[in-house]
Amino acid sequence: MKRLLNRSRLIWLVILAFTSAVVLSSCDKEELEIQQNYPFEVRVMPVPGEVASGQTVEIRITIERNGNFNDTEYYIRYFQFDGQGTLQYFSEPPYLPNDLYQLPATQFRMYYTSQATVTQSFDVWVSDNFGNERQVSFQFNSAD
Image (spheres, rainbow, N blue to C red):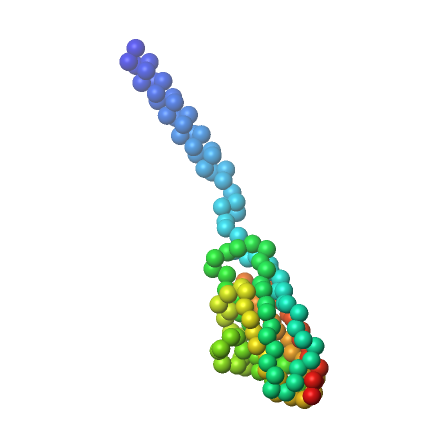
């Protein structure tokens, strides 16, 4: 009787080991990967169409993500191709054109200060550390 019980236990152990091996080997490595790269959109609240020389315009920007990965980092750069002015984040020093700056949040305010009496145009590029990038264009007519 003992032999029969030991044999039954052995058979169950073999079945359990075989089943575990089949289940574990059938897991596809790709199924276990965590998605990190999520596309995003950039939304901007309306801004004035005109700006006078020396006047500062607040630009409210929100990065709307299609998913969330905690280690995603966002960056901003800008290029001004008409007129002259400065762009800065809150009370930080003004950004230099085409330099890359890390953004501390996905909802933030930029401040553009006009330094010209002509039409001013510039592009803002928001990117993440996975290579996704979005462009937003701004144009201000002179209020002088």
